[in-house]
Length: 137
Image (cartoon, rainbow, N blue to C red; front, side, top):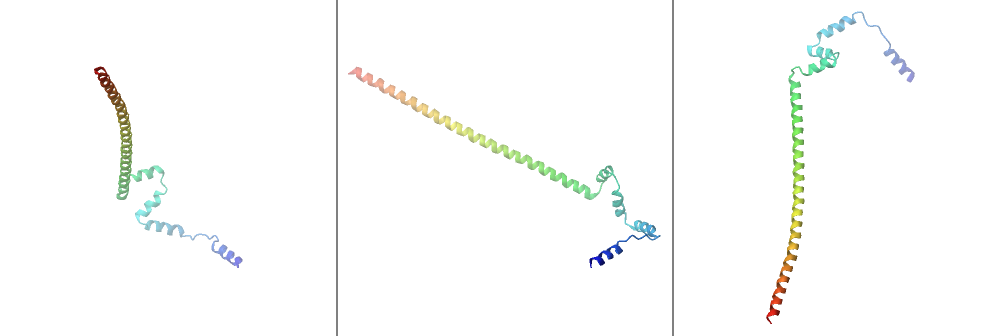
């Protein structure tokens, strides 16, 4: 069975000479093609410089695509800018909280020191009154 398949494949894929009018028929079909298809086929043979120049030739879809790309880039830049502003705001708030905690700690320390000083003043005032009472008696 595989022998028959191989034989059929060889027969189907054997080399055949082209008919004498083959070139004329191909050229006639090329001439009958629409202009857009001819340009696409000829564009395949152009170099990179020609392809770049073709990109900048005015065609409605190319400019629309370029406009869409520009809009996307602008949105990306704007989004990145807003993200960085948000991160800065968060950092400033965290710094403010740390400053608040430091101020509160300083106030507690100052309050404790003032309490100690007030107690000393009160104790010295009490001693003076006791000494004055003792002198009177």
